[in-house]
Length: 338
Image (tube, rainbow, N blue to C red):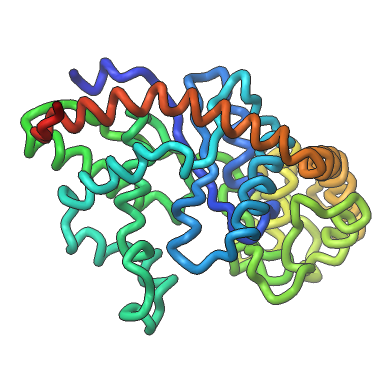
């Protein structure tokens, strides 16, 4: 098998921890929905990754359903994509063990996200938090995924996935796993804090006014954008004029992503406008785009049995792809099975 013979297939996942906010939607979920129909798409709520840090069991189940509801409400169509939660497909952890034995400790030591999350307490965090990039590689390669839409901060993990695939193929003299390509595109792949444009929007921020939650109603959405931090200057004539103006650039990027246009087009439309004009326009756009998603999320979360049914159906479809690939990997490694 050569790289050119792999079926074009997208895989990506999101952790069920902390709820969804605008950064998740514009940085990932909206693009996932847009990719449906371009090639085969597989999307996963990665609940196995969530337990690398302590999770309350009831909250983990609720969080998994909330993420699934957010994906469905944002346009992920279970008739066009496979949508499931990771723990329902045991092949993920089985392939992960093979990759634990392929990946090198030095590779894990270079993972910047582990260093950021562990901080000065690295000796006391779980082994899972240290080794989870190997599970991420298994998530992707279990489906022979050729493309992974990721934010810039996750690109290193796709590069590690390529390293693991390359080493497996080299060690066993095969071309079994593809060299997956990261897909990083769009004007708002990294959505910033509404109170500090130098920081990424996060569910864990101190103030709820820093972010737009996907469960916020229309009034909250409008209020947050109208009160977003800006600077005294009007919007410039060209995009270059936003250099060193992080809050202004963030709002322009958000507008362009919500409106499916470019930051250049936004500047052309609003050049010279003050924030008293631009922020209400952004608020109206955000309400029009996001409030229906919030309403649909609420409707879905009031019917957990329907969410569970969709995830169960997706897991069945995922296993149909994953199991043959895992079994072939076992054969390549040399496992004896009776």
